[in-house]
Image (cartoon, rainbow, N blue to C red; front, side, top):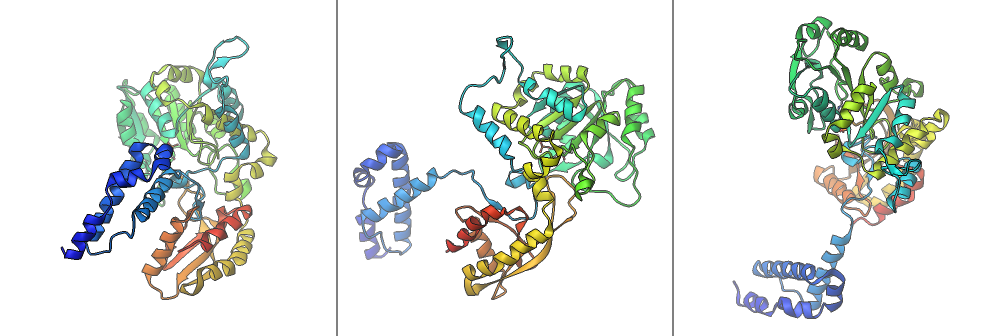
Length: 465
Ligand SMILES: *Cc1c(COP(=O)(O)O)cnc(C)c1O
C-alpha cells in the first residue's frame, strides 16, 4: 500500500464520530440500524481506499451515503411494475390485476374488525366459508364449496383428505409441471397418496383407467394440461366416460381445472377453455381451480362439488393451515359477484378487459407513444411500432394467440450490450418497466398499458440515467 493510501485510511472517521453527528437519524431509524449501515459504509470506504481510490472528502460525505442507504431500505420491496411482457396473466408479476370492486372490499375489511368467522344472526361463532360458498354454488352449479390459499393447496388438500395411503390413477399425458414448483407427481407424494400412472404420454384409453382400479383406488383424477398441448396421434378419455367409470366403482372423479373459467370465452374471440359448470355437468364430483388465473381475482384455490366430499375436506386439519385470510376472502367474494352481471363483466374485470383489448387500440397507442419514447431515449436507440402476439399466460395455452402491438427498441450500434443496459435501466425505474428481449430488440407490448398510465410510463423514460 502506498504511503498516501496509508494516511488516507488513518484519516477515515471512526464509527463513533459518525454516530455522534447522526442524532436525528438515530432517533428516526434506531441506534442498531444506523450503526450497521455506518459500519458497512466505512468498510466500503476502507476497501476502496486500499484499492487506490481517494478517501471520502469529509465525514459529511459518508453520512450522506448512510442516509441514502437508510432511505432506500425504507422503500417497499414489493411494488407495482409495468407488465409489458405481452403475457397478461404473468405468474412472476402477480397474475390477475384485481377489479376495483375487489380492492374496495379488501380495504373495507382490512382496516378493522369484521364478521369473518362470526354469525351475526346467531351472535355466535361462524364459518369463514359462509361468505363465499353459496356464491360459488350459484355460479358453478355445485352443491357445496370451500376455498384455500391457491389451487396447489386445493389439490394437496383434496388428495390428502380423499386418497391418503391409497392409489390415484392419473394419465401419463397429465403429469404436468406448472411454474417449476408444482409438479403433479410431487404434490401427490406429499399428499400421502400413491400415483398410478396410466396410459402413455399421447394416448390414454378408458380401459387403461379401468385396469388400474383396485380396492386401493381412492379416486380418479384428471389434470388439465394447462401449459402445453400434445398434438398428432392423441387420445384422451372424455370426462363423462371417466365420471361413469368412477361411479361404477363408487369412487369420486376429481378434475384439477387449473384456470378458473366460468364463461364462454369463444364468444369473446378467445380460445375455448372448459367452464367449471360444464365440467360438473360432465359428472365431475369435485372441480378445483385458481382464483387469480382466468377468474381474474385474488390468489386462491376453489374446491366445488359434492356436499359429502366438501364436508370431509373441511374436517381435514390441514384445511386450517391452508385457509384464506379475510382480505383474500373479501376480494374473492367481490370478484365472483361481478360474474352475476355478464354484460358488465368485460369492463369490470381487468383480466378480461386486457385479454379482449382490440389490436387497433393497442396499435394506435404504440403509434402515439413511439415518437415520444424515441425522443426521450435519444441517439443511442431507435424505436418502432411493430405487430406482436400476446399470450394469456399462467398455465393457459402457451401459443401466442392475441394479436397485439409493441414498441420495438433497438440499439443504434446494434450491440446486445447496449440493449441489455437499457432493459436493466428500465427495470431500475421508480416504477420498473418489464418487457422482453427478442431478436435484437427490446419489445414493450402495450396490451397491458392503460391509457390512464401513459403519462407515468413516459415519465420513467425522462428519469433514465
Ligand atoms: C396453475 C395450476 C395449478 C396451480 O395453481 P396455483 O393457483 O398457482 O397454486 C395446479 N394445477 C393446474 C392444472 C394449473 O394449471
